[in-house]
Length: 265
Image (cartoon, rainbow, N blue to C red; front, side, top):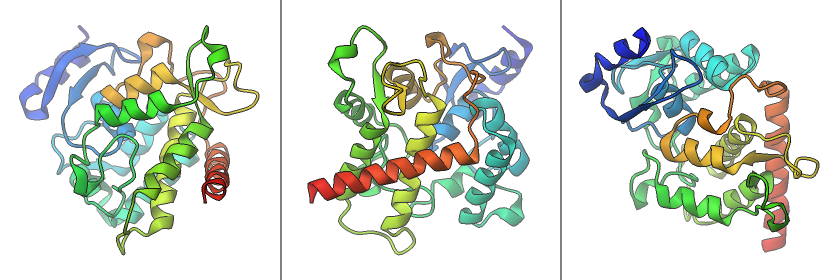
């Protein structure tokens, strides 16, 4: 056991650790689940792998530490990581405080929102922790294309677009602080991040559709863990996440959603 892991476990009770230690991308970032009620899978994963180390949900995530965590964990470019953290703090009203806390992130109707793939809507149940039945429902409904069953199953951009349309249609009323366009913006951004972080460029589907490996997404969504034992790496060649690439995927998802909505209505 590395010295970093030993130090991590020395505060086990205070940090709310649960379960067993699992490998991470390197010795400094093993997985040890921390139940802090984080509504965002991407941030929860960074906490579970100690890229971010808040003592509790009231401690602020320092601005530049968050920027570095995104770069180290998900291979964000520096400009994109900075923009991501800047916009999150701007929306939460925490720029002058130098960072936001998980407590602020949990505030419904600001960044935390309904129509989540992995969480219930606030009025329907636990809207902070991942819900296995919702995750499985999404992954099982995804179009994996039966003629490619010999290879790893994929979740495509179209699958995400269809799910986003389905989830948005269930919302009967929107909060004044979070109108429909903002829910869509957040949902599309989350889908784009998942597709880019777990993208599989070697799939036979890649020529026709942006896709992510289903088994990687399953581990990430269920356990909020990086699936390194399944071959995922955060420094894969050609997989740096930048502003232009992220914006392009967001545009493609939104465009596909509009097409699906037109066909449905």
